Amino acid sequence: MRQLTVTIPDDFYETFIRFFKHIPEVSINEKTENEVPLWQQEMVLERMKNAKPEDYRSWEDVKKDLDKKWNFNG
Image: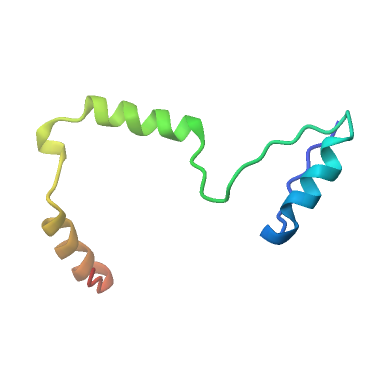
């Protein structure tokens, strides 16, 4: 069996899904473009759980560093 990733326009999505749901051998795994994989979510949660107060930096300090390095003005 092969796996295929397809990107389709939003206005064609419903038609596409309805068509393929009628084919028994097809498994539809709907993902959005910005979906964060579960393994990555777990990794971030683990890092947050193990972080110490000294690991954190203020947003103001981070902005200053970004501005120095990348001319970030956010």
